[in-house]
Image 1 (cartoon, rainbow, N blue to C red):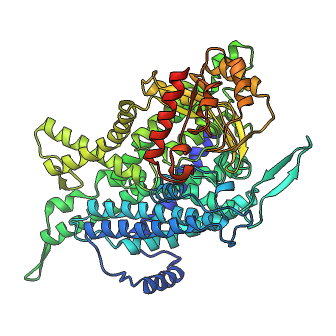
Image 2: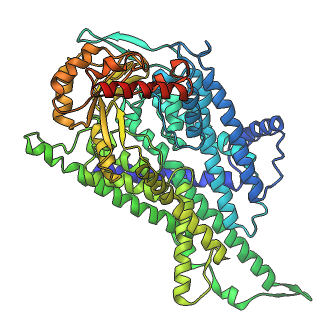
Image 3: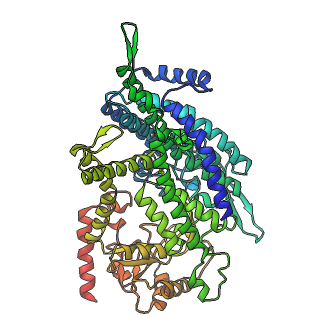
Length: 639
C-alpha cells in the first residue's frame, strides 16, 4: 500500500509542471525552448507550405485532421506491403498480407493499437519505425491537437477560430512528444531495454535447448507507446516481458509516461478557461470604468468585489477552478478502482486455495514476480483508466472483482483517458449534469458562459451513447448471425512463423457466456497447422487432456498448413481416444478425397478447396463449391 501511495504522490507532483508546460504550448505562450523549437517548427512550416498565423474554423480543423491521417494511412500501408526489402530487415521478415496490413495501419492511425501479429516476427525494423512508431507519434499528436481545439472552442467566444491543426500537430510533436520520448527512452535503455538494429540472437539455454532473443529499436517504441497512450507492444507479450519492461524502475517510467499527458490536459483546460474568465473580467472593467472629462469612473460593486473566492485557493491557482473539479472527479474514480483491484488481487484465488496452493502473496496467476500484486494492480488500473492498453500482467487472470475494474474504466472512458479523450468525455457528463440541474431549478443551464440548449444536448447525448451503442450493436450482430460455431487453437502454446503463440481457453469460454450464446459450438484444434507445440507431446495425450479439461464440442486434426491434406493415421489416433466427441478433418479435404476422409472423421472443414484453382489466397469459386457438395451427397448416401 505504501508503494502505491508514493507512486500516486510522485505523479501529483510531476504532473503540475508538465500541465503548466502543456498550457504554454497550447496557448502559444513563451517557453525556455522557444529559440530552438521556433526554428525547427519554421523549417517544417516552410516545407509543408503551412501559414502558422492562419486560423481554422472547426470544420476546416476536422477536415485537416482526417485528411492528414488519411495520407499517412496510405503511406503506412504501402510500407507494410513492401517491408521485405533489405532495409533495416536483418531477420528477413516478409511482406505483410493485405488484409492484415490494412487492419494494422487503421488500428495504429486510430490509436486503437490492436495487434493481430507478433512484432518480433511479423514486422521488419523499417516497419516498426516508419509505420508503428511514426503512427504512435502522429495519432497521439492528432488526439491532443483535437483536445486543445476542443478546449479553445469551449473557452472562446466563437468556433470560427479554434487554432491551426498543422501548427498544433507540429508544436505538440516537436515540443512535447519528441523531447519527452528522448528522455524517457534513454531512461529505459539505462534500465536494460534494447535499442539497436541487430538481428535476433539465438542462445543456448541451461537446459540445452535454444531460444530466440528479440532485438531491435524496442526502447524507442516503448516510450512513445506509453507517452502517447498507444499500447501496442514491440513484442507479442507486451510489457510483461523483461525486454520491454525489465525492472521496477522501468515499470514506473512506463507508468508515469502514460499518466502524465492526460493529467496535464486537465490542467491545461483549467488554465485556458481561467484565462478566458480573466479576459472577460478585464473587458467588464473596461466597459464599467474609464476616463470621461478628466474623471475616472468605475463600478463600486467591482471595486468591492475583490478576487473570486475560488481563485484564492492553491489548488485553483494550479488547476484552475474547472480543471480542479474535473481532476478531482477523475482522481476519485481512479483511486476507488485502484483500491478495489488491489484488494481483490491481494485476497488470492479461493479456487487455488481450496486445492492447497498458498495464496499468501495474493493472486499471482498471470503476474510477474518482479512486480507483485501492488504494481500489477496499479498498472492494470492505469492502463485502462488512461486508455493505453499496454499490460504488465494478463488481465484475463484477474479475480472477478479485480477484473471488473479494467472493464469498468474502459467502458466509462472518463478517468483521464488518453490524448484528452477522458477530459472531453468528462466534460460531456458535466454538460449533461448542468442541463439536468438547470431544469430542476427552473433556470437556463449554462456551462463556461455558454447556454446549454436543445442542439447542445442532442450532440452531448450522441457522444455519450455512441460508445455503448457500438459495443452492444456489434455484440448483438454476433449473436444474431447464424455463425453457430468457432474453430481455433483454444489451448496450448506454440512456436511458428508468427513467433510464440499462447492461448487462453477460459477467456473464450467466458466470452461465450457474456454473449449469452451457449449454443455456439467450440471446435478445438488438437494440432494447429503451421505451428508446433513448444514441448513435444503425444497427440493422444493432447486429445485426452483437451477432453478432460475443456469439454470440447469437436476436435479438429490438421495438416501442415491450410490446404494440406490431413494425415489419416493421425486422425485415427485422435478418433481412438475421442470417445463421443466428434472428430473433424481440418485441412486438405477435397472432392477427390472426401470419401476417404469421411471413413475416419465425423466431419470435414473446407475452405481452400472452394477457392479458385484450390489456392488459399484466391476468391471462392461457386462451381467448385457445387462439385464438392455433390460429391459429399454421394458419400453420405453410400454411408
